[in-house]
Structures are given as structure tokens and as C-alpha cells.
Amino acid sequence: MPQRLTGKTALVTGAAAGIGKAVADRFAAEGARVIYADRNEAGAAEAAGSAPDRRPVAMDISDEASVERAFAELGEAGWRPDVVVANAGVQLFGHDAKAADLDLEVWKRTLDINLTGTFLTLKHSVRSMLESGGGSIIVTGSPTALNGEGNEFTAYSSSKAGGHGLARAVAAAYAKDGIRVNIVVPGYTETPLVTAISDDPESRAAIIGRIPLGRAGTPRDVEGIMVYLASDDSAFATGAEFRVDGGMTTL
Image 1 (cartoon, rainbow, N blue to C red):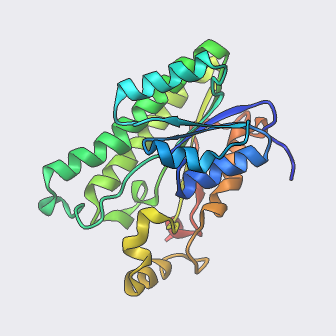
Image 2: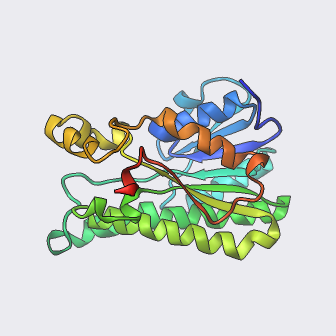
């Protein structure tokens, strides 16, 4: 495999499982030193394993003290990231709902993690990268931020739309400082986050029926575009959306 990320240090949030773990593993295979960040400290440690080029770190992205502490510890240990994937998030199946039926606490919890958590990740990533001369930040977005796909997931859709806007604003604000920010939009990707859909044959068939390529996505489908955006091959890309959704958002 080409080693396109040799010499880089990458931090991936939500790296204990799903897309986050797949991307972190791929980054390591591409030659990067990789920080597996997750609020599940044991899960991060298990995902990272014992290889010297992989390092777990406990990080609750909804808690600024936790994010700030993690970045400080990494900097002191010589693991300051020049690539950050803001991937961690939640989708509260069974609780998120149409606007008139949505409980305020579900709204707050979703935005605390998905939007405020992404903001805190970007805030401290930018602070770190300003000290080291720049870097690449990648935000995991969603089709629900772009069309009506999430009409029954008001909080999740709103949080992801906010994340897209946040990424564009940060990209524009820090381009002159050598900090690039882009958004990757996976389609319906089968991970532990979406078992409420993948374990229900009717729901699964309905959503796959809206994907022109005719299948569910996998974490592996997202790895390649993440590597590209983390690498110097994408040096002129910032503030952009890269859709890896099987054509879902073309409909």
C-alpha cells in the first residue's frame, strides 16, 4: 500500500469503532502516527492496540476541559496532530423525531455532542495547528445536512447542517494560516451507530432503495477520500464537501 501519510500525525475522534476506527487504521497503514480519540477510553485503547505508531487518548468532545486536556497532553508528549478527523457523533434512534414531537433534552444532547463537540474539536485543533504551521481538518458530515433525508431526525439533521456550516466558516477564517477544513459526506453506512436501521429489514430495504448504487456503504468506502484529504495531494482543497454516498444526494 502507498504510504501517503508518512511523517504525519493524525487524530481521529470516535475512533473506538465504526468509521472512526476504520479511518484511523487506514491512516496508520498509510504511514501516519495515529491518535485514537474516544470518550470510551477502554475502547480507544483496544482499537489502538500496542503498536508504537498508535496512541489512544480519552476525549469527550462535548466537554471542553476534556478536549483541551487531551490536546495539551498530546502536545507535551510530542504527538501534536497535523491531521484531525472530527468524526465522533450520536444519532438518538427512538428519541429524535419530527420537530413537533421532539423532546428538548434530546435536541440538546444531540447538539451538545454533534455540533458543540465538533466546534470544540475544531477550536482546539486550530489552536494547535496555529502553533505548528497548519494542517488538515476533516469533518464527517451527513446527507441529512443537504436534503430531506432526515425529516424524522430533526436534531441530528440540524446538528449535521450546523457542522457543515462550521467547517466552511473555519476553512475561510484560517486558510491564510495553512489550515484546510473539508467535509466528507458518507451515505447510509452500516456501523454500530445505525443498528436500528440495519437490524430492521423493512427500514434497511427502504433506505438502500434510495441509493443509486444499490447497496449500503461500509466504513471502508470512506477511507480513501479521508486519506486524500489528509495527504498533501489535496493541498488546494478547502471548504469543500466530498460526497461518498452511493449517489444518495443526487436524488
